Length: 416
Image (cartoon, rainbow, N blue to C red; front, side):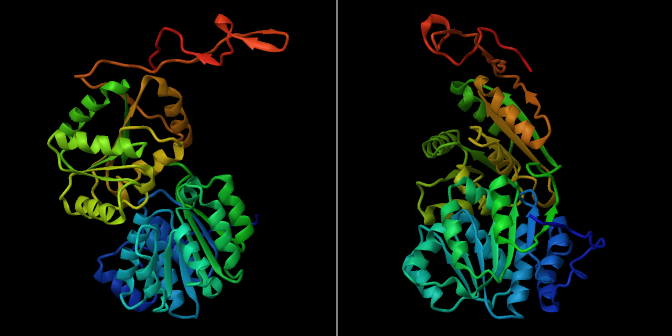
C-alpha cells in the first residue's frame, strides 16, 4: 500500500490555524477547548482537506474531535452523509454526545443494538446528515431498506482494531461494498494489526499515516504494577486495594458472570458500585455509566465489550481483576485512566500461572510492568513452565507416565 508520511504542521498552541471554520472555532471556545491534542493537531488539517487518514493514537487522546470536526465542516460545504462505525453501543453514544455539542443543529441517527428499532427508523426518516452505528444494527437497517449507503461521502472507522477483535469483519466488508468508492475514509485505532492494513490498502486512497505513539504503547503518565496472587485470594486483595484508593475506580472482569460477582462483592464491602456487560440492557448500561460519571457510583465493573465506550475524565485507578484474553485489550483497558494528559494508575492481578501473559503484554508495550508485593498478603511468584523431553516410539510421542504431554510446571517457583 502506498502511504504518505504526514507533513509535520507548525506547532499550534490553539485550534486557530488548522483550517477550522470560524463558527466551529467559536463553539470550541465556548466548550473551553483551547489546545488541540497531538492527534487533533495532525489529523484535522489533513481531513479538512479531504485526505484519507490512518490515525494511530492511544485511547483518550481526543480522536473523536480529530475526525468529528472535519466531518461536520465538510458536510456543511457539500452534499452527502457521514457514517461513523464503532464497535460498541457505549462508544456510539459517547461519539454522539461529543459531536452534537459541535453543531446542535445537525441531525444525527444513532443505530445501535438494544435500542428501539422504531425510534431509529423515525430518526432515519428525518434525513440525518451523520449516522453513528454499530455494524450489526446498521446491517439490519440496510437489509430492511430503511437506510441506503449510496449517499455516504465520508466514512470513519473508529476503534477499528476492536471491531475486528469482536468479529465484525464480515459485517464491515458488506457495509464497505455498499458505500460509494468515491468517498473520504478515515481510520482511527490504538493498534494497527495486519488485518487493518489489508482494509486500508483495499478501501482507502493514498492514506496519510499519522502515528502519535507506536502501536500498542500507553500514555506516558499512566503508572502500572502487577500483583501476583492466587485466584482464591483475589477478592481479599481487591478489598485491600479499594481501601487504599478513594477516587473513581474502573474494574475489569474477563467474563459477564465474573463482572456480576465482582460488583456484588464490592457492594458487600460497602462501596457504591455498578456493572456494565452484555447481559445488562441498554438502559441499565446507560444508567451505570451516567451514575459513574456523576459520582453516584464510585466503582464501575466492566467487561472488555464495554471498555471502548467508557470515556470518563478523572478515573483514578483501572484495576484488572482478570487479565484480558488479548494483550491489545490491556492497552485499551488501562487507557481509560490518564486521559488527555492526566495522570493515572493501573493495577493488574495475575495468577502464578500467568507469567507468559504478562510477558506478552510487556512485549506489545515495549516496556516492563513492575511486580509489587502487598504487605498484608502472602508473597507469590510466577510459575516457570519448561518443556518436557519426550521419547518417540514408532511415530508416537510420550512424556512421563506413557501419556502424550506438552508442558508441565516444575515443583519450584522462580521470582522475576
